[in-house]
Length: 123
Image 1 (cartoon, rainbow, N blue to C red):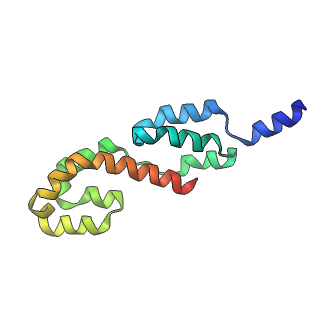
Image 2: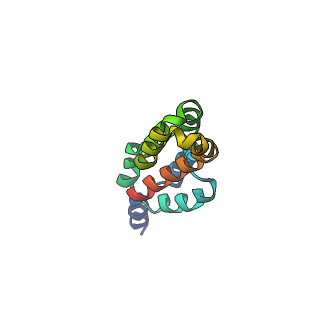
Image 3: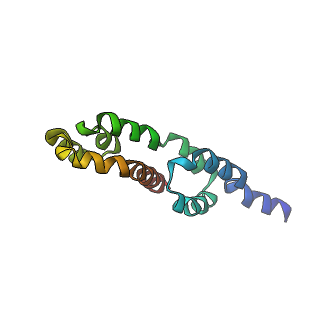
């Protein structure tokens, strides 16, 4: 009976590994969705959990700095994969600066949501 329990436990990820992953990467995800992410990670197999390292997570602070410095050119939107809005910002100088200022306040949340979406697509 103990060998059956050990076999079942070995197919799922160790809770300590999940907790360490969440602690190391919590600034990449929206705070309100970390609990949901944690529950999904607990139910993963070991092989799927090892694939998490292949997912590229964007740093919200880096994107904020890029948005502050060269956001008028739409680089921040290109980095998030929002090509259409990036082209619009590039051609209109950030819609005369209005969209650039809006992005200064929203780029960190957009980055965290994008990271969360990428993780959920893999799971």
